Image (cartoon, rainbow over the protein chains, first blue to last red):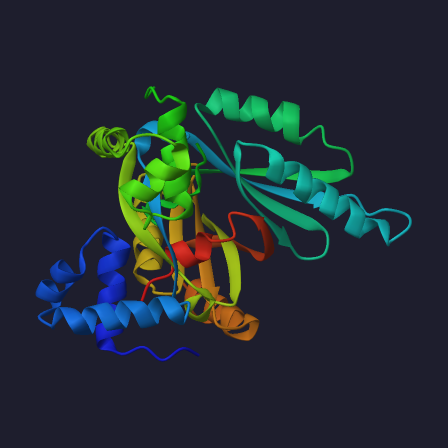
Length: 160
Length: 160
């Protein structure tokens, strides 16, 4: 486990909130010399505690309707084929621009986060593009509304 | 819908990849004058296309075991109480540091993304902290492994 002290954590919290803060702004807020802040950020980057800097896109580019799709693959007669089914599903989903995230769940399932401009378009996308994939056994749609935590998730994941 | 041209999109893509790029680095990569890049980024910020700059935390701070929890609330005898149950569940979950994201799903359900250092700790957390909440009818755990898209999600959401 990585060792972080209170100053490291305070710097990370400020940068998470606004990564455009300059060294001198951070130094002022935390009441520490600029050289200290500079050194700490350098170390946090070198140690990979900060992986990278990025931007969060605003509402105008975010899909308005978002859902989790839980997909269970068919159990093939030849069991070795299950891995092939799963990789096929995961690969196909991850290429689609409406699919924001894809992860495996257990032996025979995949979860995807999908987004579209409207609920109608989202349902159409699920019906016409996801449910028709071969090798699927079960598809469950879990619509997501009103985030109370992690609300910027979609603005982070959306592609341009 | 916001109007973006190819240059705007190219800038956004570069900044998503690495928001520490300087104006002159972006100008060089896209073969445009610095003044143009400067102006475009200013406009993208003013229009809220770029909501904010942030950092993604590395592996050392990310939980090793992550799962989605689908929670259905009890249907109360007095139907008006459902909203109270849902807000209680969402509020309680969102305060917990292991809970990375919380969203409502439909009338009677809530979805949370939770993370812990190990699978054992995650299961313990779900059993001892989530499943014991009052007003729950059904709790389903969907473990997430091997992201093939959106893999930085957890590094984006994790708090320090």
